[in-house]
Each structure stands twice: as structure tokens, then as C-alpha cells.
Length: 374
Image (tube, rainbow, N blue to C red; front, side, top):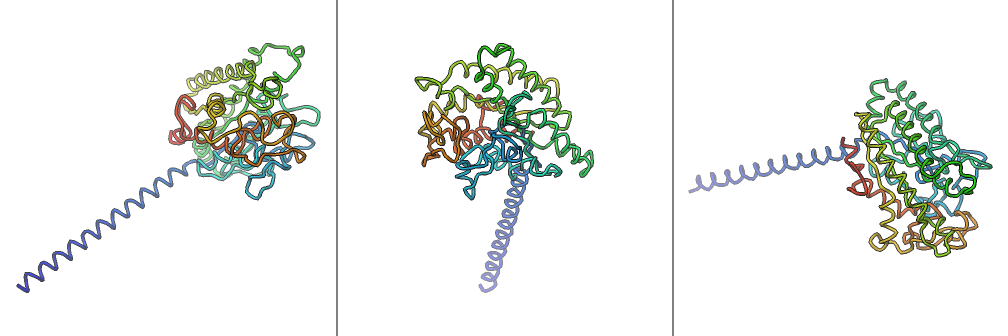
């Protein structure tokens, strides 16, 4: 009987050890899977940002003299530390949110250190700039045109090749994300100008915008870009700036129609670019319909105010941009627009969520998360 009891005890102990070992190995498998998932989430080596004030993180701070700046209150009131950084926002903008999504620090402004190699990416974005070199240029107005931004990237790519070696640099750039947010200021310039001063039709103007952008994207490809995140223009006619000029405070159908037309031609151009350059992949974000959806169904996204800017003064708080003399709303998460043309931090985050994991019709042919895995 004692021998039988001892044998049973030994068998139970052996079973327990076996279960413990299985549990230990299962735990190891889970850890390895989590580690692999985490590694995959950090697969983007760098993010290079080209564009305008929607993604400018401070380049314009270094441009003198120019009034195209946001390095003063009340901009940045909700940014960590509560200080203005040069972002045209109450807090973080879309560039910050995109960096967070791909597990990278925000790409620093290029003009903050023009000799850096920027191994984790850099931002060339400049408030007020456009596809055309003349956009954002004038008396006391200076910005970095998209052409110049691509030129700056050419310099960075050369430094990367020198430091990493040509093959490693090529691989680095092939896996990096190139974010392009441009076009709004060109359209604003056209529709804000005197009708009698217009030398071309809206269609001719848009055609030239598209052809110019196409050549710049091809140049980016020639410099190593393989994964493009291209953001279309929003419903510009629904910004506080355009509603301000309407006696009924309605959206400008004319401006919206041409903004939409531009986006349609942009998507066609990108499809053609993909056919021509087989090794390029892209994600296009339909800002127009995504933002229009926020404006038309604000409660679905936690917003209340869709017409007026949070910071400014006058009609719809859109007489002027946000300045130290302006008033600002206390309920900034309720507003879609921070100033007369720029979104609040809250609105930017909602849009970036769509860019990252959204689906058609707002983002196609793939979202940002899928683009990373291509």
C-alpha cells in the first residue's frame, strides 16, 4: 500500500512538473510573439515630412523676416509645457500624431540643424508654402516651397549615403515613410486673388498643380522614396476663413468643388505614377470627405462647433489668425477648427486615426499601417 501511495505521489509530482514546463514554454512563446509584434510596430526607420502648415513643426521659426509664423501665444496652449512651438495648432498637429502611430519621435524641423543626418526622419514642412514656388512668398512672407523641400531632402539623402553606405541608405529610405501634405495654399491663393488678375482658368491652374507635383514626386522617387503617404486637400470652402465671407456663413461651393476636382485628379495621377514606377507604393487620404463627415456629423466624433474658429476674433473668430491679442475658447476639444484654416489638435487626431487604420473610401488603396507592411 505504501509503495502504491509513493508511486501515485511521484506520478502526480511528475504531472505537475510537466504542466509547469508547458506553462513556462507557453509563457516564453507569448513573450516572443509580443516581442516580435513590438518589433514589427517599430519597423519604420524614419519619417520624412514635406508640406505646409498642417504639418509644420517649427521650420518657419527660422525664416526671417516673415509673418508666416506660429511661434507665439495662443498657439501651443495645449502642447506639453503650454508654450508655442511654431505649430499652427493649440497643441500637437497631424505630423506629431503620425509619428506616434508609427512609433517614432516627431520628425524635427530641418532648419533647426541643416547639417544633421536625421536618421529617424526630418520635417521640411513650411507654413504658407505650396506646390508652386510663388505660393507663400510676398512682402514679409517667406516659406520653403515644395521644390526647395525636395532639394533639402536631396542633401539629407547624400549625407545618409555617406554615413550609412549607399546600399544601407537605399534600404533605409525604401522602408521609410514619406508624408506629403500640400496644395491647400495654392488653391487659397487662387480663390483669394482678384478675379480680374487671374490669368488662367481654375481647371488650367489645377492641371499645372498636378503636373508640377507629379514631377516632384518622381524626383523623390529618384532620391530613394518608395512609400508615400499623400494627403488630399480638405473642403477648403468650409473653413472659418471662407464661411466668414458668406452672409449666411455657409460653405463656399465654388471653392469646395475645385478642391474636390483637384483631389480627383490627384488620385488619378497617383495611380498613373504607380503604373509607371512599379516599386513605389502609396496611401492616399481623402481629407475632403473625411473632414466633411466631421463637419456634417460632429456629435459622432465628439465635436460641437463646426463653423467658428476657437482662436481669433470677429465674425466666426475668423477676422484674423490666432495672435496674442486674440481670444480663444475654453472648450478646445469641442471645436474642429483652431484658427481660421487649421484644425484643432483633437480634429487632427481623429483624421490621423483614419489615415492609420481606416479603410475605403477615406483611405486607399491601403492605409498607413498596411503601407508599412508592404
